[in-house]
Amino acid sequence: GQNIDQPTEMTATEGAIVQINCTYQTSGFNGLFWYQQHAGEAPTFLSYNVLDGLEEKGRFSSFLSRSKGYSYLLLKELQMKDSASYLCAAFTGGGNKLTFGTGTQLKVEL
Amino acid sequence: ETGVTQTPRHLVMGMTNKKSLKCEQHLGHNAMYWYKQSAKKPLELMFVYNFKEQTENNSVPSRFSPECPNSSHLFLHLHTLQPEDSALYLCASSPARRGGPNEQFFGPGTRLTVL
Image 1 (cartoon, rainbow over the protein chains, first blue to last red):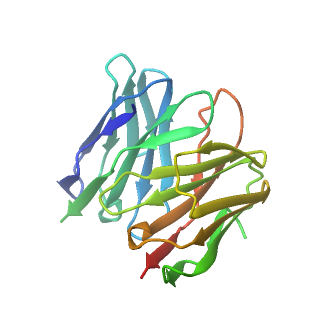
Image 2 (image 1 turned 120 degrees about the vertical axis):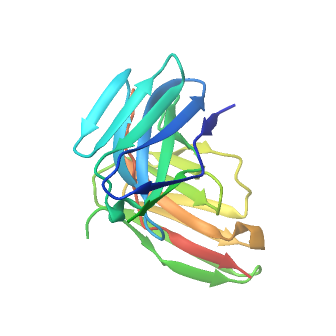
Image 3 (image 1 turned 30 degrees about the vertical axis):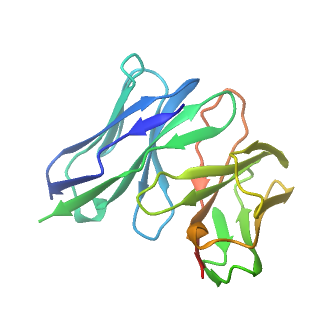
């Protein structure tokens, strides 16, 4: 079966750096997505990794290790507006199927 | 309108009612999706349509009936639902390129409450 694990909650301080980890066990893995979801809103795309390594987009970076079934999302210079749920999702199979984790609720404090 | 829109945003219905959720995308995509999001649970994929053809039904009960009349519109027809079906129902769309991965764009969702 498909299994995605990520921490339920994390708390960090404004201006700091936080790393949200995600491990996956899936068949037919083709890539790893990260989405951000504010309460009551739609998930919005942050990044995806297909190959091993680090992808950087401004304050957000995402890393993938296919051999270890592991990814992380790194958020730098945290802002209060970064308080949200961060969803890890594995792209599997030859079609368009995304399998999501339960999400990590990040709280940014002063 | 741009992106992915969903109507209604909120819906309260009884177990004997029949209602429909509507999704529309203005992104020129050819794949559309229905997801269910319940508290403390992962987003659950329900249905996938590629070029108007259903390509995935994730063991969804028959009280949920999808319809995709064209690549821009997707409906979810609801009848004789149960209280445990109360959740946020999200629609998404993406390109339908083979070999992906294809980024999915989500609508704002319909918050459904079944009494």
